[in-house]
Image 1 (spheres, rainbow, N blue to C red):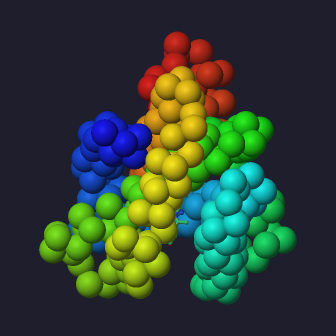
Image 2: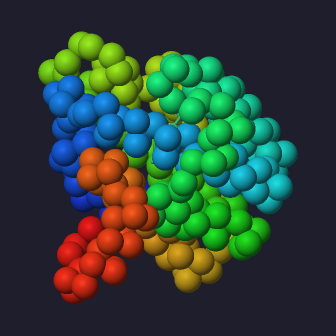
Amino acid sequence: MSLSQDILFEAQPYLIANEKHPFVQGIIKGELSPEQLRYYDKQDIAFEYNEVAVINALINNSTTTDQALLFHKRQDMQLHMLDDWLKREPESMPHDWESLKQTTIQPINQLYRQHMASTIQTHSVLQILPSFAAGEWMYVELGKFVATQTRVKEEPFQSFLSMSGDDFLGPKGYIQQFFDIIDHEAESATPREQEQAKQTFLKSCLLEWYFWDAAYKLITWDDWKKNALGGKGGVTL
Ligand SMILES: Cc1ncc(C[n+]2csc(CCO)c2C)c(N)n1
């Protein structure tokens, strides 16, 4: 079994848990509040800016020119996507880079961003790529899942998780190409390095679940502070 097959087999329970999460269910049923959508939007733009640094590291540490070109193409898409996103709904959101820099990165987002960024110092595509590819894979799979469900037609629920175009799908899509690169790099890696890469992927899948959860519950550092300083022994956040 290739490393990517092994990873995908172990990631299945995480995918099912993500499909069941009330935020994902709320997208299908159109039952999320403007506050929940706004929290997600703000945190996710900041998350995607962090991905720019991770993709840069993938370009820097590519082991072939083809890899560098693929990551470069993905980076181009990332920056155009962020540019389009920042131009949307400026009246309801601080959708410009200056004010976005002021956005507080909330606890789970910080954990996830640092989980990804911490792989950069390995200088290894095999260690960096799974941290990033897991989120892409999860969104593509969730997109396929929601397409099988009867979902509400109004925006923003209608287009949420609808992955448009074939950029990510199929044998030449990003997802398959990322897995091909993971398998190629795994050939020259030790079992321990392969295991590390797998655990990094699975941790990203876990943090995907917590990302939905934080948006669903609107969890902030203030909640963490109240919980810690409230003197009640703490509740589960
Ligand atoms: C929590 C979270 N995880 C992963 C992504 C990454 N992601 C999902 S789909 C996509 C590209 C197409 O929109 C990207 C980059 C994200 N945004 N938020």
